[in-house]
Image (tube, rainbow, N blue to C red; front, side, top):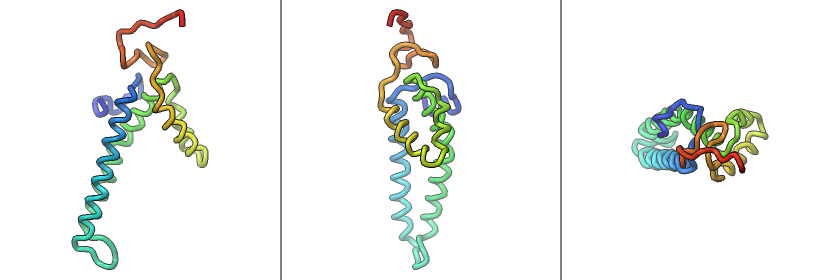
Length: 135
């Protein structure tokens, strides 16, 4: 679903979709850093790591750039799942306030989504569920 909805900022995404992508990105970066450390010793000099370490770093930067937009889109959809606008992510760009927004988004990403449809779309857990008007 992550790459299928590459630039889809509409709709909702479940917690599982969000956290599986976060885990995968963490593992890719961790393996890349370990690989850079191992390959950095090959051909290393007193000036710094070897050329293979720089190659791994370039690949990691390209990967990070490739998942930047879909990661933002996924975070917006995750916020939509708990019935919060995705525009709140722009507050993360403000110095000092951005760290508080980051913590808030982390906490929000742990909260279960709104049961049933909300203003951002149907429930991704039960898409056929009708809205309860008496809640």
